[in-house]
Length: 401
Image 1 (tube, rainbow, N blue to C red):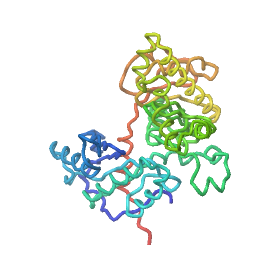
Image 2 (cartoon, rainbow, N blue to C red):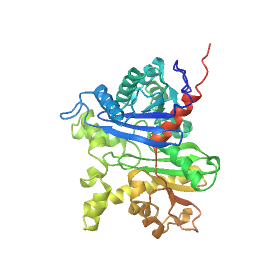
Image 3 (cartoon, rainbow, N blue to C red):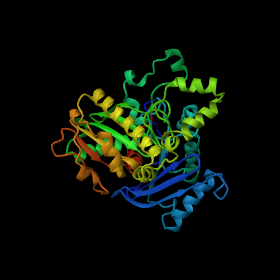
């Protein structure tokens, strides 16, 4: 499936320019309402602690609350100016490689992918189901975290295990944060005054979850996350790359169950596992006080970044820009400088003064003499989802038959 599926919903009227973006997580629902006439944000919100004490009962209640909040602002979901609803879906497997108009068939296909994203896809499906019940007349679009990485060639996507087993269980590199990597790589090309097709970019998406991608001419050719979002860079609570033998060792020698190993690698590792904090700001404060554990956590984090910058430089051959994005990438000058320090032989020269300046928009932080630009580009996944949703709602694929 190429990702394009048809829907019975009518195209929006000319004055219907608003798009609601929903991100339904396992215990929260984030939303933004944008007007695509000028890409302005009309409202945003977050409903947390779904199913927990003090929170709402379930995702239906969470979306009902979001709908009430919008109505209280005069932006109700019953507005004729609402053109479409866009949904973030974490895992599209190999079936969905582009934004997709949602039908019953598409929902079932997303459901079949639940084993690949057991914590995320069920919540995404619930959000889709409730939103379709609220506005069955509107086009609704699924935008997949994995889609941008679907162009990664087989040599990079394949793990070196028995192919029959890999194919049977869908084991391959899928990659995640794709909406962010696509948005940021294109915005970096714009910052450089060039077309995306002319630019090779290494994107470093550094939030609590972190991933890297190698983008050649606007097309992703490698990425750090794999079958799951656990592989790759050191993250807030996730280990990133680890020898698979470690898992076997813990099961055999420590008697840990699969679930215990899962919790260790996803919830008790990364920066948190190394020093007890997963907030880079707090780690920086502790480092300034001479805290050895915080310093080690920072050093491990930065070392992994440098390894991927070097590896992806080799993959791309020519690099025009290294770009930092997301919470840590956009705000930590110390991480940016440490990650690229000493890489002048690769053509990367930082400007410490530029790098230290705090600013909100896209900017260069490399030295004027640097052969490779170093940039900070704020990500905007909601805007990217809204753009994809609105474009597909205005120009749906033709019904077949």
